[in-house]
Amino acid sequence: MKRKILIVDGHSMIFQWPELARKYPAAGASVRDSLVRKLTGLQDNSDWTIAVVFDGRGVKASSEGADGGITIFYSKDGQTADAIIERLAAKYATSHDVTVATDDHMERTTVESFGAAAISSRQLQREIEAANRELQTTIQRLKK
Image (cartoon, rainbow, N blue to C red; front, side):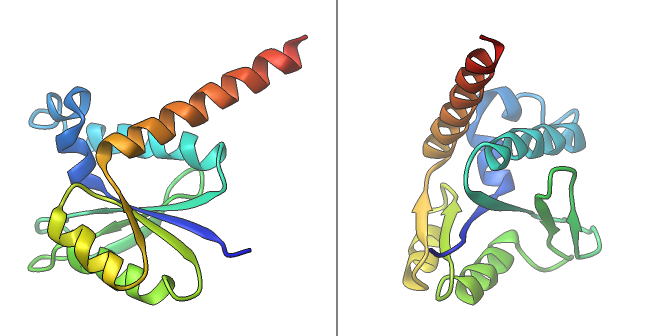
């Protein structure tokens, strides 16, 4: 069975989720951390390995591991998160089950041309909610 990889367009998710978008102008780093925490819960309760990609906007290009094993990429100045997402999709889609979460139509079309699947921000929210429900069910069952 192929390893399942979920690549998340971080800012696309933030700006489509009202609870995060409202807070972003005043607390961008905190909002990015909040998204990573949500994704960590999904990774912990699913069979996805998750990477999230953010536009760095002047930040030195980097890739760092976050608590919970999620890989976080920041694009370098003059590079977009989309370029990193496309590179990752092209590299892994032939050997892994790759899904990209983005609401950018052009990005969805591009990653699908590499053999990756694409889901929307709304679909990703549903995946996170389902994983949280499953975790709560497991906790309740273990308490009995």
